[in-house]
Amino acid sequence: DEEAAVRFKEAAEAYDVLSTPEKRQRYDLYGHAGIEGMVHDFSAEESPFDLFGDLLSGLFGGGAARRRGPQGGDDLLYALELDLKEAYTGCKRTITIPRDERCAECSGSGARRGTSPAKCRHCDGRGAVLRSQGFFRIQQTCGACGGRGFVITDLCPNCRGQGHVTINRTLEIQIPPGVDNGRRQLAPLRGEGNAGEPGASRGDLYFEIHVREHTLFRREGDHLICQVPVTFAQAALGGKIEMPTLDGPIEHDLKRGVQSGDVVRIPGKGMPSLRTGQRGELLVVVLLETPTQLTKRQEELFRELAELDRKHVSARRKTFFEKIRRLFTGEGAESKPTG
Image 1 (cartoon, one colour):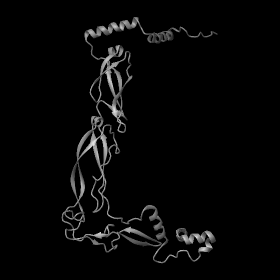
Image 2: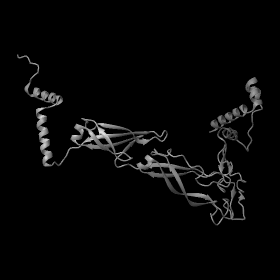
Image 3: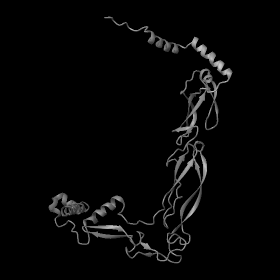
Image 4: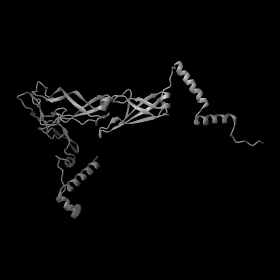
């Protein structure tokens, strides 16, 4: 597109003026007439893209495929599975990870001992080559050396020219109380990732936590939720009942008249906060348990209770039955005019 090429060249010339203090000063004083003959004239060997490459290099720290010293090692990610009790108390874990170590035979060079890598002739050791594509000159990673700037002609027999070998590394890690699912629960172990090129630092080891579901407790943030069945007698009379916690069962004074579905809140028996260490609450959902099999004596007692309920109904039940009676007898209904 010839029109696009002209606009691109104009933009490059504008950058050339703005990046040169003398040209910019003359432009500020005299306008475009002051810089006639001073604007950069692109030769056949360069393009306006070279100027923009300099600009992008200054903004983003270098162009593509430009090597800046030895490359550091890759980071590793380890998936760590815990049960809820381990997440509650914290624990120590011994783990084994496969990772890259610098080859001891060639000291990480990849070349046979006694030899050295040779400078890449294709890119003259720069790791990149320039490709001309019409109006543009594009810098690309050298295909001969893979951007390394050198080639290995005599491979190390131990690592086959890779410069590193894979080993199993055993580590002991401390897991703090309160961890939850996710990747930001444990601080990374610096320098426990893969080895880098000679002279470069190792990568880091990161963790992703998976906490298994518990058969009794469900976690919501720093709170734990569970369900506890109670009998009619316990719900009506109250009294001491046993509540489960991750520290073991505890006694709790249940209030009289508790209803099925009520929530009993027990402070300090939830999960510890990873940030503050303070524990959340244990939320116990009360479930009224209806017996399915009764002894003869239990049946007699329930029949007596039912008889008492008929004679001494509560105010709430009385109101309910009065509404039903009025519905069928028509008592209290407004009289309709007869015509």
